[in-house]
Picture 1 (cartoon, helix red, strand yellow):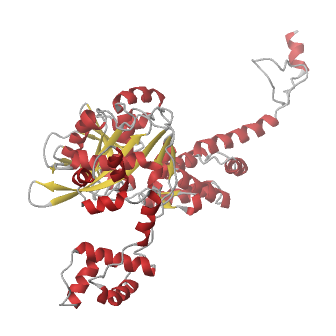
Picture 2 (tube, one colour; picture 1 turned 30 degrees about the vertical axis):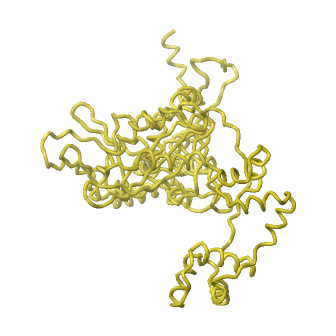
Length: 511
């Protein structure tokens, strides 16, 4: 205010004009004009010693703040009114100033001061280099009087700012997060080289001093993809500020004022909003339209795996697996192999071809095939799905172990097959039982040693190795005669044998 008074005075305003312009008393204007800058600062710092209406409550307020330093001035005012019925009527601002003067005099801080991390704006990343992922929650109005909590997944490409959002009415799990990733990368038509995450419990088990331990589901998914998953340190939202801003943008621009009518309708509306607004309008930061930037960036993204392209296409639709290992499709129930159900989020991919439906797991492994039923309420059952094969597997193991002479290494080899490829254990055991039946024990032992040494856990390769060792020994028993052409393609070797001896009388008769 002193500077404004001086500025108007220099422009030729008189004291009355300055008073009207700045709405100050003329005496105040006169006082300001009488002091230079240094004198004015000294006058402010000395403060005014006016009698305080609340001075008699000084000790009470001081003790209250020392015991409860987090109390606000409004709370202190309420305590004063509660304790002292004769409290003079003062403005709340007076109480505020009184409380602050006590805090300042006795160094009573309200709470820990927030420490801000010093950081600077980073340069824009290259196209296709990075994406950021985060989750959000929001309470939506329903058609009735209540509200519905929705959960959403957000992925944004760091360079183009192209966004994708996916909604569901249940909290995200590792399995549904993987599904959201597949939809997002399909939407982007490629995968970035790095994806930045929070340390969310649906993705990681433990920070482990930097050696992040991922959940089994997410670790399996990452092993099939080409991007590198990078996790921010805890309480470090600035590291992925782009997606943090998108979460707030989705809440304010898309969800606010919208009526919840189901997750499917919400996701369909979200795609329309992304096209019109989220990716269709100029970004306030880069001053470019995300969709147009994405047309450039998609050429720099890594290609998607073939199985992801198939599973995300309309021809392979995800269906939830029921507890009884069935799926509901077109008002009928179709059975799946026993133990396909692994929890509430278990899904299979359904592909309809001619008069049949084909059911695949998330890795595009064919689980079963059913003939399409045109009725309603029918359970189409494959009797093999409900058969418990654990006992026959156990018997088969015993039989194969006997063929392999019940050695410790033979048992180890079967255990490693079961661990490495449990789904194909039965097929491997059947190959061992049939393929090793005609081999000598010494060749079987050599084949087992070879496979264990080279970490080959496949019955076909073990059988071929055993046959090779047997043929090799037979080859060693053959003799190559010196006069034979060793390069001949017709006869390389000749077995050594004793020729028959004819009687001389036979030749004499011929003569």
